[in-house]
Length: 193
Ligand code: PRP
Figure (spheres, rainbow, N blue to C red):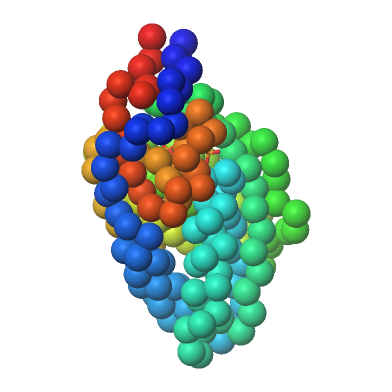
């Protein structure tokens, strides 16, 4: 059971990456993705809910890179593995599928964070079965400390500390996603009982 968040005010312990640092990381990812898809079509697959912001910002950053992809489409699917707890259950569920087929497309899966790797492993298998021309993955925040599986990630933005983090799409009990920066919560805010 998870305790209810006591107070939003004062819940942030410290800022880990500022909005400006995140924006610079996204610019770096955009340049790498644009270079690898020069004059090719590109489909970004954002993984809801966490990748809502990174997929939106990344798609616009890629379009600003000169001589990048010939066209960019953005689609979203929705998976869940965490429920409302602060630790992964290890179970990945597809809650909403893509709107369009990805067969024959150059696809980059866009994630806000990778932790144990099970979500990305599931998504690579799911989308790989649909025979895209190319399938790569982009993760803004990497937490490499507790991988359950080895899964390739072609584009990595920033290494997050081994802490429960929120902001820029990441939530605690569906709160804090809208923070423009990545933050660590005070430990007393969340307690799994
Ligand atoms: C988070 C995150 C990734 C996944 C990564 O999603 O957005 O999709 O966990 O964790 P893993 O590498 O340990 O599998 P979550 O299930 O919390 O859903 P949300 O994006 O809706 O917050």
